[in-house]
Each structure stands twice: as structure tokens, then as C-alpha cells.
Length: 389
Image 1 (cartoon, rainbow, N blue to C red):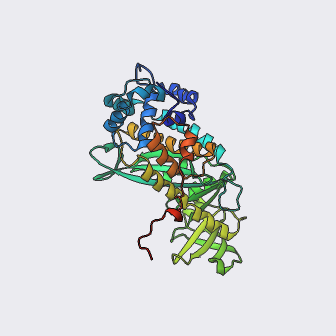
Image 2 (cartoon, helix red, strand yellow):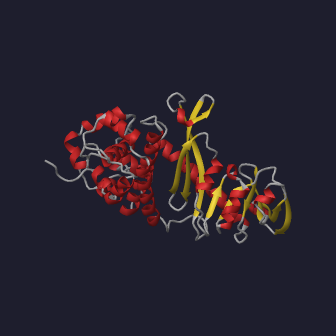
Image 3 (spheres, helix red, strand yellow):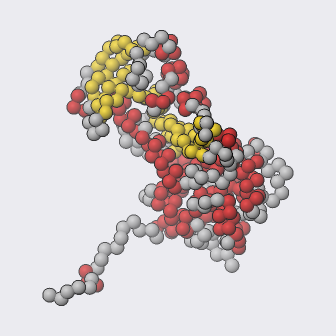
């Protein structure tokens, strides 16, 4: 007898199924499909992410162990390892990419008023990539070096809520700076870039789009000082200058003036040179903005530790991209759940609680309310005495 819904079913109810089916129809994902639908495929991969499954056999074994509950969890097709492997290899990964973008739009609306930690009303993005090493024999399409393969995940992260807004999955041979061509600059927004993205032609394209950037200068950057502003050396600032590039290529690729901020980090004993096209913010805010770029590094560390993206369920390019996009969908879904239920728990704790209660038939809010972060205090009246004095 089925009484209530499982935690997994309640979590999946946050997903707009009409929007998912629109993505499936856009790429004809269920053409000639009779049994195992794209929705079944998504549920299997989402279940694998939520419960930390190691491989396809692991996924199928765990789901078949709960066969009486699968229908009420949303599964309609027959689950088999070969069927799931075939779907990952052949069904267009763009189905799950477009669907994840819809979830991202929902999450950004929920987190648009999250505190940034800086006195800024504008949107702040951090753009960076992470590399996942692969076996060259199994992943020849992602050859990175002569005897090594790798896949890169390039992410544009909205720092309000740490929501990934744009994600690009490429082979390791793709240079990071080339992905700047894929971005659609948002006027008035700030883009925080590492030193690897210093390409003055592409940075000038951001300036022409009325967007701002903050990045680190390369050591051999040639420039001429045009003017300077007073700074307080006790804050770590050493100089705040307006410069013009004088290199034969850089001056042609970026003909506009730049702002050069010299900052000394006493904790790490490092001298940092920042370049920006914003001349209105205080110099210390420019340094704090670049420090906030570390959030994208923490995001990569989080998803590598708590989601299945370092080991893949398939070796084809389509299977890898499908798994990455489903993993990101699960991350965003947990973020949406946290906001809609008003939970004070971290995303890590929410994910851990879901993983062990996924088959329970309890109201999902009650599951999290039952988790108490504080240990009960010992009652001195029942404390046993080791020695009687």
C-alpha cells in the first residue's frame, strides 16, 4: 500500500516537467523511443548524483531493489544497464543543458537579493575553468597532451548565491581564453577573471559592451602612466593609476585607458597588480572584488567532492556532457529546494540528508526539521559519578 510520496518524488516535483518535455521535443530526444524515455534517463542520473552511485550497474541494482516504489517515484520505463548506457551515448546532451538553464533562471530569481559581501548593486560574475584528468585510451576525443586526456568545465558563476549561469564542457585541448568568445556580456555587470584570461582584444569587447572586468596584470605588461589617485597605504594599497598600454600589440587591441591598482597582501606576502576598466569604484573595492573570485574555486571544489563528475558513467563525449549537466541540475535543484523551504542548512547538509532519506515517505520539510545541528546538552542529574567523594 502506497501512503505518501517518497522524498525523491517530492524533490522531483520542483522540476517543471512541461519545460523538460519542451527541451526533449526541441532535439527530438524521444524519436523512435518506445520504453525508456528521456525523463526516465534524467531520473536515473539524478538518483545517481543524489545517492553517490559509482557506476551504471550500481545505479540499476539500487533502483531494482526498490522496484515496488519506482512507479510512484516517476519511473515508467524498464531500467537496465544497457538501456541507460545507450541513452547516455546517443541522446543529445543539449536536452539536459537547455533544461538546466531553465532551472538556473529559476534559482537566480530566488537568489537575486542574496548579500554579496560588497557594497554593490550590480551583478558580479566569476569566470574560470577546472580540469578533470581522464584516460587517453577510454577518452580519445578529449586528448590533452601526447599521453593524456582531460575534460574542462568552464563556468560563469553568479556570486549572489553561487549559481552557475553558463557552463561549457570541452576537451582539455581548448584554451581557456577562447571561451570568452562564448559569453554574452551583460551591460553594467562585473566579470572577475584570472590572469589566464588576459587577452586585450577580448577585454576590449567587454568594454565596448558596457560591462566591467577585474583581472590580474601580467608581469611583462608595458604601459604609460596617465594619472594617479591617492591611496591609504594602511589598507594594503600601494598605488591607483590610470594607464595606457604601450605594447605594439596590446595598445592596438585595447586602445582605451585602463585602471591599474597595486595591492599588497600582508597575510600571504604577495604583491598583486589588478587591471580594470571601472574608474568609479574605490581602489580597495577593486581588490575586494578580485578576492571574491575565489568563490568559483570553492564551487568547483564543492561539486567535485559532493557530485559525481570526476568519474563518468560513459566514455563518449555525449555521455560525459550529459552527466555534467545533470549534476549541475541537481546542484541547482538543491539550491532551489533550500530557498523555497526556507532552510538554514548548507547545501552540503541538505544533500547528505536527501541521500539517506531518499526512499522515505515523509513530508520533505519534516525530514529537514528532524535534523538538529546541535547536540543535546547532558543533564547533570543523570550524569554518573566515577568516584564518590
